[in-house]
Image (cartoon, rainbow, N blue to C red; front, side, top):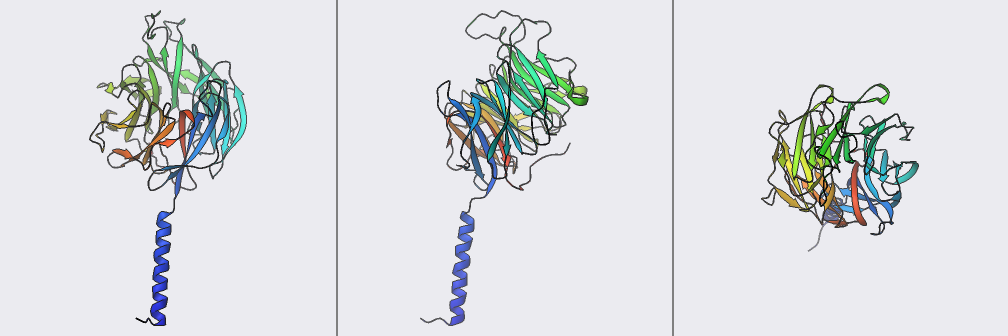
Length: 404
């Protein structure tokens, strides 16, 4: 069978177009970078590092991207990024320091300055204006310190420092676990527990309530002032804390009682319990995140090696559990998830850092329902004992957000 010259040209063009289409369909498009804090080895003195993964826009699958960089110390426990995604900060607990890294558009990290502490830093947060870094430190006494950030992300001299003390029990050992800054930059909240009152396997030496949230208003020049009624009771052993993007609600995970505690935010940043809480989680909830649109809550359950999702009733803030694609209220991760994040570019993927699994677990989020399912090829291997992760959008991808 013979083809005319015109027919041959048409056939070649058609085949070429089909091949190009197939190649384009197979192309991996990065929408986010996931930065994970872990260690080179499993020993207590092993150097910390930050690993970089790229998120595929279609599947949510992760692939190793830029080479890992040293975290600048030992025992990395927390990460934070500026709202413009140009700067990353890592807290190294064993080395008692916080290290600043600049983030290039291709996800490459470059180490900048380091600040040191007298006690181990535990958690970090940067406000949405990207002009203040908050660090909570201490293993028996807790301190919240506020640092100004320059336009280049450089950490300045501390502008405010607050000792976290329960007024009626000034001699108790207060252990900080996490902190959050409201999206409007007006308030900072720190989750802590009283080790004198909560002493598993031992004898408590205090009659204080074990769990507390300390609240502060941020004034002119960054001045921190305790909010009315602070500190607020927070169950037994609060671990994770997160505020919604429209500054109406704060949620805290209680590791010891397997609950999610909700608060409404009143005038001046005062916290009031949600009247129908607390709300059941899996066993030993470790961290909590709210999706960028303020519609869903996701909790990592460290003992169950799972995540739990909730819808937020916007008028009241009440969380209601989401039944997942496996017809369950929970979805399995790898072993011991201790940190959780939602991607900011599309708000479609959820990831956990699994400390004993030496991995990241990935989930696809259905925006209309909040239901999650496994991403392709999850879990993704990491180095030893990942403890924290943050996500930044790649290039000019928009960030999912709500406007108060």
